[in-house]
Amino acid sequence: MREVHHSRAPPFALASCRRVRGMPTRAVLAILAVVAAAVTALGASAGAATPGATAEKVSCAAEKKAVSKATGKKKTTAKRQLKRCTDVNTANKKTLALVKGSHFVAATAYKQEDWTFCANGKYATATTSDGSTGRSTGTQWRTADATYKSAGTFTVILEDPKEGLSVGVARKGGKWMIGISRSFGEIDDLIPATRTDATDC
Image 1 (cartoon, helix red, strand yellow):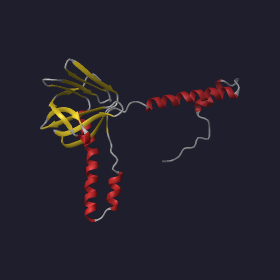
Image 2 (spheres, one colour):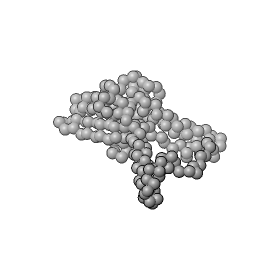
Image 3 (cartoon, helix red, strand yellow):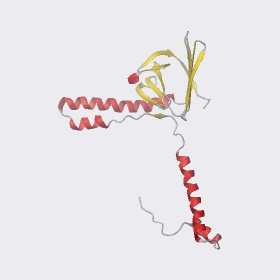
Image 4 (spheres, rainbow, N blue to C red):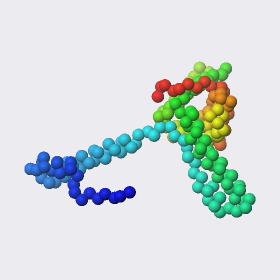
């Protein structure tokens, strides 16, 4: 990319100087500094906008290094481990596309679930049991520890590490299910769920 060097003051600065010719130079420079700071602040504010729901990207650097150093059977094993790592990142992305913007409801004899996961990162979950309801809300969730075979067969953890949220969503034979997330992407107590597009986002 060609570098561009500005040897002259920008047009708006020259115009400002003409309009305030009778004002001391220091005062003009102070005004321009305030304007520049305001523009910078606006740019920073725009850049700090919530990025929306995301897919966790696991670092596979250690696995790549192992592949480059290993030989023989050890290299085959290292390649297999690297593939598992990259497969998780791919699955996280694919399942994100399938679950973002979703509203899940499910019920059993002892509890009711009502979850909303918006594409913009907002979420709200409500679990009602024994007459009381536990709620969780936040503005930045992500997919993690996913496994993916097809759009109709996958598992994924929906989490917000900052707020402590971690729940599981699965699809088996095209049927949606939700449950309790465990370590290493495992999901317990899966129950059938109905999915519709999220509207309260």
